[in-house]
Each structure stands twice: as C-alpha cells, then as structure tokens.
Image (cartoon, rainbow, N blue to C red; front, side, top):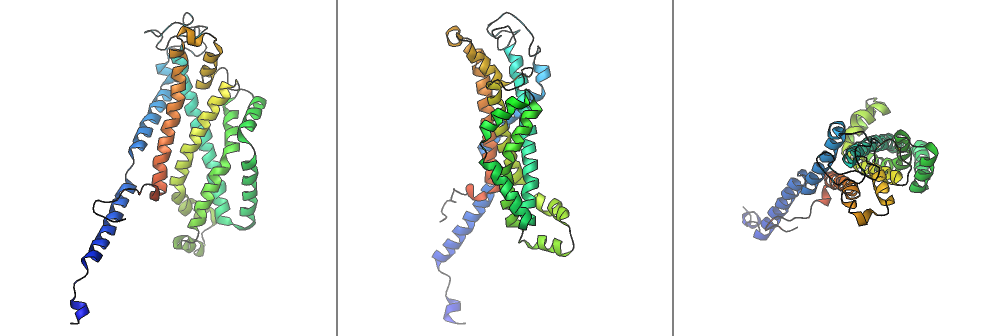
Length: 312
C-alpha cells in the first residue's frame, strides 16, 4: 500500500463535502415545502371563492332591490347597512365576489389557454412559424393595454363576457412568451427527441410530453392573470364601464365616493371600506399564491437558508 493510499483524507475536505451535501439536502427540502405566504394566500383566495360560490345563499336581497331605508348602519337585517338609495350593501359585497371570481376564472383562464397554445407552438415548431408568432406577440405587447381596455369597454358595452374577451386579447402575449421560453429549454431533452424519432406528431408531442412539463409554469401564469383580471374588472366598473345589473366591488366604491357627505356621515365605514378591503385582500391572496408557485417553478428563489454548520 502506498503512502498516498494510507494517508487518511483531510478533515477539512470531509467537512466541506458533508457541508455542501447538507446544504443541498436542506435546499431540496425547502424547495418541496410550501412557504407560509403560500398558505396565507390560499386561505384568502379560498375565502373569496366561498363568498362567490355561496353568494346566493349569503345574500338576503337582490342587488338592485330597495331593501330598507337609505344610509342605515349595520344591523341584523342589513349586515353592512344600506347605501344612499336603500340597497343592501352586504348583498352587493357577496355578489361582487361572484363577479370577481367569474372574471378571474374566465379572463385568467382564457389568457393562460391562449398563451400556452401559442407559446408551445412557437417554441416547438421554430422557423417561420416562431418568427410570425413572435411578431404578433410584439405587436400586442407594444399596444397600451389600459387605454385600449377603456376604449373597447366603452365600445362593447356593459357585458362581463365582452370585458373578459378584451382582457384575454390584451394579456395573452406575456404568458405566451413565458411558455415559449420554457419550451425552448425543453427541446434538446432526450425523451422529446426520441419521441420525434419514433414518429410522434407535433400535437402528440406537445400534448403528452411538453404540456406536463409546463403545467406548473402555466398555473403560476394563471394566478398572475387572474389578479390582473380582477383589478381590471374593478377598475372598469369604477369608471362606469361595467354591467350596471351586476354587482361589482369597483361600482360599489364609485357609488360610495359619489356621495359627497360620505366621510362626514360615517357611512364610509360600512359602504367604502368593505369593498376596498375585499379588492386588496383578494389581490394580496393571489400575489402570495403566485410567490409560492414561483418558488416551486424556480427553486433557486427559495434557496436562501444555509444548514447549521454548513458552508454555502
């Protein structure tokens, strides 16, 4: 046996290797763990989902029904009081949650569907198809979204479906570029090249191999698109471009601010504050869910802690 073989390994080298291994193990465990912000966001979103789905049972009146005397404070018959014409504000709040939930699912989901389809086609096919789709994305990206939404919202009229279509038409390019970049990183993988070599068509490869790989990215994009859709719907309703027959948090805020004695009568506590808090908490919950999903999509975001005694 030679001297090099008999010599024990350097303790510092052993410690260094074990420290790096421990750091990788801790990083892996942290990557698989959902952060606290994610659970808080999920709880907030779940609360508004329950409000939206149970709006018919929770609301005791119709949205436009004159349910009591004007500007009545909260009571057992009117949990959040009444507005200037006697409409029940709790009913408008619960039905507004349904409107926001519909917009988040319809507009956010539609945005992700269009973005995923276009992004996968552009990233996988390449060549002229990719070039044409990229130019289309660039055209939509340079168009100012909010002014276009206001103009088209005024032209289309008070329709929730029309507003959802407008949001989808203006928001899909960002998701498409994200999915395209993900697909471009997947193209060199061996199992995808093997599928093509065995004769699998484009649709089959995208559906069976590429789509499962980009699902988590698509879910994260859906959360972001849903928050954008809720904010746009509330903003359009605040500007008077929403459906007047549907309750909306934005329209409730606008009606409250149009009452000139709002802050002198104390009615802001039950008329203005609840819808503002609902919009803020719903967007906050979606943001927290997006942060948690981002850490799952990109584990390097979560790798900030170092194991005790380990060297990064």
